[in-house]
Image (cartoon, rainbow, N blue to C red; front, side, top):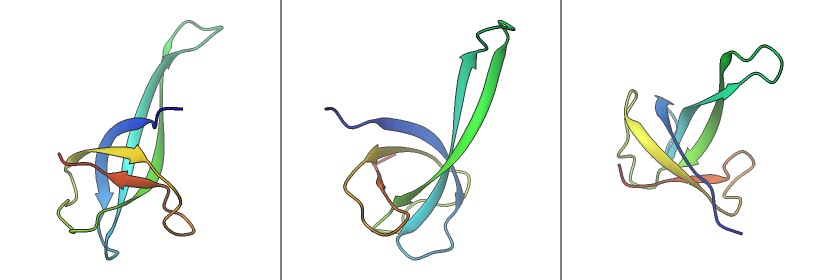
Length: 76
């Protein structure tokens, strides 16, 4: 099964080698037929500490790195 790649905005880079990424998902409500925005935060591994708050970043699924990290940050 292919690994998912999501795109979002970095909201926190306080922890060493870890960033928090806010990913927004848009979909049409099944009954109301209105576009709905839902957001979710993911913790991603950033080994070089290269991403800062406000950067747009792509993250990819990976094997568990720690208790909360299951994603790794890709270049750019």
